[in-house]
Length: 455
Image (cartoon, rainbow, N blue to C red; front, side, top):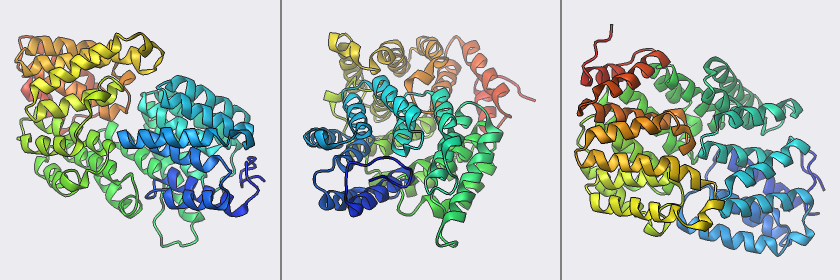
């Protein structure tokens, strides 16, 4: 049996295939959880491995200890069914095993091989993009969809999703105009394909791509309008909602509308709205931006830390998560705990077995220096902090995430430099910002802190 893209399936049950395809759409559109559809697929064919892989991959992306444990069990169960699976499904199993063991580069290589042979493997495309984003690989986020898209039919229900991935890759490669055009086109195509023309299109990565393009051009008002226009498609029943509320708050900060940003925090980005690890990462990054702007956010950080409760046993597992945990600990006034977290990261990076994990070099070269600079700032050693952050900021892409996310490093650097005897370091980074995009109220704020006059 084959799916609608011509890919061979390891089942003869049409019901199982249909439910798995439904789950794939849910995963790629971030529509709630694929759990019920995957359960139905397993009930229709208990011997088919792919539904187990779909759920394992979904859980590995949630950045929660419980989900990682569940993924490990799912992959063990999937392995017991591998003899019946086809070569493509076994390749996905091996990729997820590599991912589970922290060998992200090896997993991505397997997905690349799959896509070279079968460019319409939407699952390989989605997972590879997700983990490219996690490691900040802008070029791959652009090139991988580019290699595959000409092989797709634009009437395929998942074509808008893949086009959205490509648009985001373009945005991360500073091709802002094409990113915006293709992001808008992806949403329009999804709307045309919809059986209900009045229903909002669900193409979160396309909305995200246009959002990033606007942010990196300093178009904070356009960005806020864009997100409000598309709001019906990304708020109700989608796991992308919290992150796009986060972007809306960043647009408010770029406009120096702190009150507006705090209103969004109160409504969508704090308290009971924070239900999983990825949301907590966003919250820590947003609260820290407010903190370096001298906004009182101690209570927000303390509540975040209670809800997140990062596991010290996971310190050093992922540099991107580690530095966000340190932000949360420092923001909550827990400097001793932050120092302990960094010490555990340093101990872990020295273990021989860590050398096989993709995180190892990133943690050693960037994660630890960044976190140590943050600790120096908290000790009042602003010169040390500014110099340390400067050494990291140019290579910060390796930490993962997007340009928008990593702007936090530059803003923290300017904050430290303004309080130090080396303000020229902050002015250099401010100059980078001024030439990268039009001057915004937030840029003027940092210029004022650094004693720089901007025309």
